Amino acid sequence: MNFKVNAIIPAGGTSSRFGNKNKLLEKINGKEVIKYTVEAFEKSEVNKIIICANISIMDELKEIFKHSTKVEIIEGGATRQESVFNGLKADECDFVLIHDGARPMISTDIINSAMEEVITKKALTVATKTIDTIKEVIDGKIVRTIDRAKLYNTQTPQAFQYNLIKDAHQKLYGQNFTDDAGMLEQLGETVYILNGSYKNIKITTQNDIDIAKIYLEK
Image (cartoon, rainbow, N blue to C red; front, side):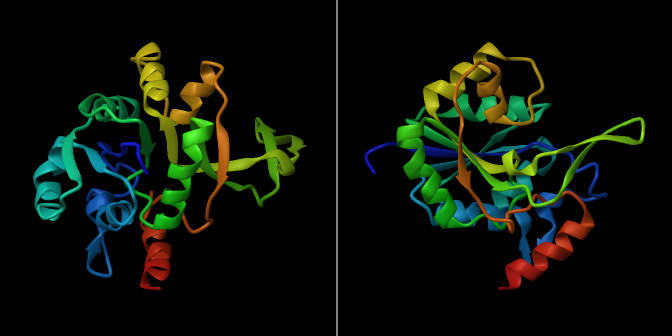
């Protein structure tokens, strides 16, 4: 591939819903959650992996990845959006993949597919078709059933032409988007879907760790 592709992994959260420990440092089968995440990108064709970290875990991350030649660790921001913007400013490239540090079941195959697809599509998000029936509820009462045939559950990585997503971050600076694809949608840009995996869950609670153990043992 004749393009420079960076991966940005926001890791600036405090894991407030998880417990006393930062979930990215929780070990599954003897290995930290974020180590699984980063290893999938290290095996891919990505050129550089930028971890935008909470300052409280920077020293631990530097120790974990001290032998990783692709990894650069920088300070994240107060929000996910700020962390990603810090990553975008840290190093210019042609295309960028943005992936949640707490999604350790991401596969290298999906990462490489996102890299291939973004060259022509310029903006995409990995997603899975919604399989549950979704109800709209107001004041505890169901008001309608939404047609799930049109619904997808958004995951990461999300992949973008670098200048496109950096421009979006500059225009929407200071807001609190939790989804980079949503920023482009806000600006009227087209974002495409890349089918993902139902295994690619985001670890939020201790229960998610139990699920991840099952998948990662395999």
